[in-house]
Amino acid sequence: MHTDNDRAVKVLNSLIETTMDSAHGYRSAAEGADNPEFKAMFSDRAGKREALCRRLQQEVRTFGGEPEDDQSLLGRIHNKFAEIRGEVMGRDDKGVIDEVERGEDVIKAKFEKAAQDADLPEPARQLVTAAYAEVKADHDTISQLKHRMH
Image (cartoon, rainbow, N blue to C red; front, side, top):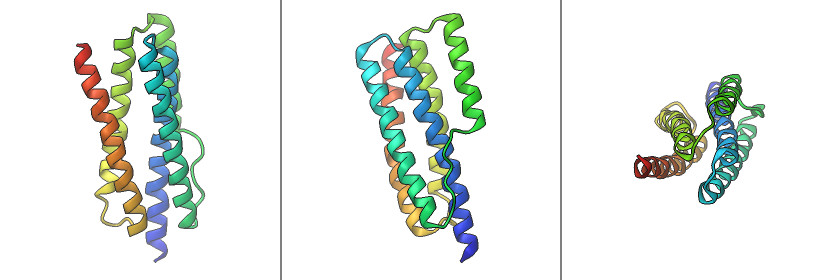
């Protein structure tokens, strides 16, 4: 049984990192967007992703693990790069949405893979599957938004 718990902790912590990266990405996007509608949407999404992080962290604790509590190094580097690139190039809303969509592709793929993980204990899988549905819906909304702008 112990190995199932370790597996759950590992998978969930990996999802927490990605979800935190996503929340930080949305915060940056909210700051970078000019359109008040986009600002509000990105800000709202950041809040949703932070809430998802807390649910995942709580789940890690139920498996006796120590939850991740900061974004991954890769995410920090990516955010820093996006920030610098934004300052250098000056982003328009289209550029911000392209950046957001890239982030959405990453988080969607990661949750999809975890939801299909047969070794994940049932309670963790239920949470991941529900979160995946939410993430996929967010991803699809951003994709539609991007296509409207092109």
